[in-house]
Length: 368
Image (cartoon, rainbow, N blue to C red):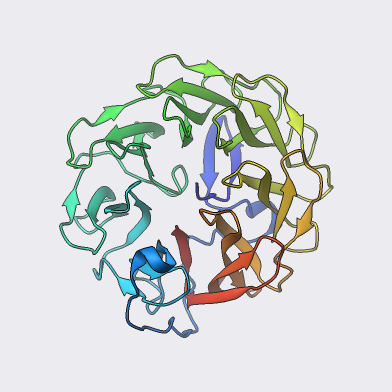
């Protein structure tokens, strides 16, 4: 799934998830769009058949620094389509498994709620409508579909604390899966659709937990004095990637699905974070600032062969593997002034060759 760049600050025992692991490095949260300097739009050309090139959906502010929209674009950079075209803030899109629908958040009705639409932007339906704040980017930088497409997962604020919810694509069956006074967020469905990985401080320390698909059977997987951040599952649902500062520095770790065999994969004085398994489980992509700024790296699943594959001047923020594992889509921002960053999205071969930018704008964050 999307990586969702992250760092948690615990102030007075309250977890505050920032959208990017940048505050410790003096960089403003990139979910706040820059306020100046226009940049060119992607080339708008006729849309080839989706099955021939593959498509992705992303949220961004391509031509207006304050108007977030949901876009669709072909993986080769052609065929840009604005799916929402609404003056409200439409953000955090997530395609259904069959790509027929897109879930997203919007404040078009006065407060942030969860919506769903057809893949062409038609048939917009609001799924939630109550006092809770939905999809807050501090706690839920993404939405997630149940692997069979029957449910959408998101976080909502309840009495000032985030809980993990599910709702059907028609708006029925709204259920709070965690329903706990603690901070429960950062969720990941296992590929076998049986369990949900999540983060919680319900036992006093920020740890990684897992629960069944219906919210039952909650089990703590880590028990450490450091901060543990879940990052996702291996394709076979047998292993879990996570970030931890248990050894005094943010590193990438791996453990079995039951919490055993916790192993550190990176060992560098810089920050290593946001790991994602390749589709075949043989490689792991992650971000690191070990070369002076945030770059995209790839390593083997045992931690060997770590390589910087972006090697650019921009900071890399969000990335996803292509379905075949041969390429990685990455969103980057160039510039030192947080209010005047130049955002771009590109495709990079897993060996670092063939970098191809395909979208430019105020802010881009997408999901293939």
